[in-house]
Length: 213
Image (tube, one colour):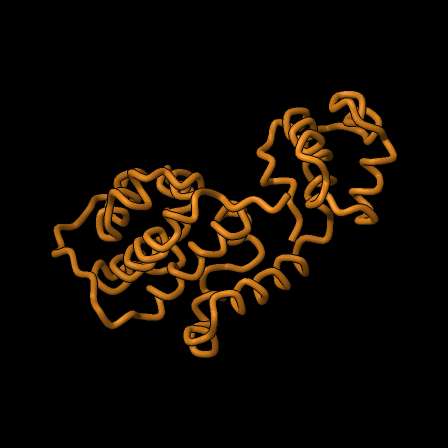
């Protein structure tokens, strides 16, 4: 049940655009990376990226995205020539790598940020920018697992205020099945799609939010 965030057709453009967005914000607009990235996370731009909206991942370049983030959070957009350099900066690589991970794992940018802040990803540039992107995925998976101790199902169930029995009744599946998923004795990633759909509807979340690393 591994689910990518959106069609593979868009991921390369998404990587380039998120990379150029961070590069432009930091190196052309002279914005602090951490502060700008926090603005990105609360803007509609991040939401549209997460679902692979073509108007954002393909239809706008990185400079346009940076300006839209600023406008969306109510910041004045300084007039600055749009620049996208051939030489890729550490900030570019940071956005490029994060875009791939978000697409590959189908997780929200905010959830990645909580476990692996953007400055930590930037700090990985020297050792990882020439490595295969799947090495980066492996490293982030380990960091995410280390940070998030509970299974996604247990976290979402508790947030929804359900006991295991209440969720079982709401989703129409057995309590034992939920227990096995939460104890990681049964792999929720390999469950039948129907089961995942039932759980996601009961919890009011996306199927992707149930997938474990």
